Length: 76
Image 1: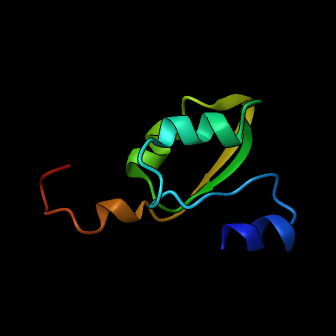
Image 2: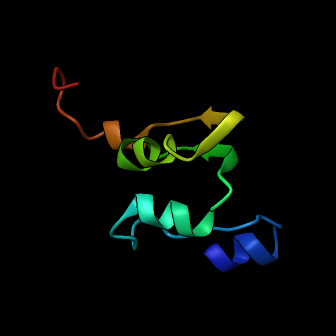
Image 3: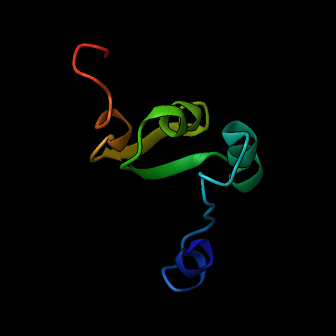
């Protein structure tokens, strides 16, 4: 899927966040110049790691925050 995003859709880089053990290291490796645009529908640890790598003026679109869906009511 990551290869499809790079080759067919023209993204600079892509990786499967579920297969990475260190999201901060993966973001540093794949996006050494920082991130200018990001579409988030995961939230949680991925979004938290990403925030350390966004460039000034970056745009982040949030839709979903799926990691919250399975949390019990009142735990947020």
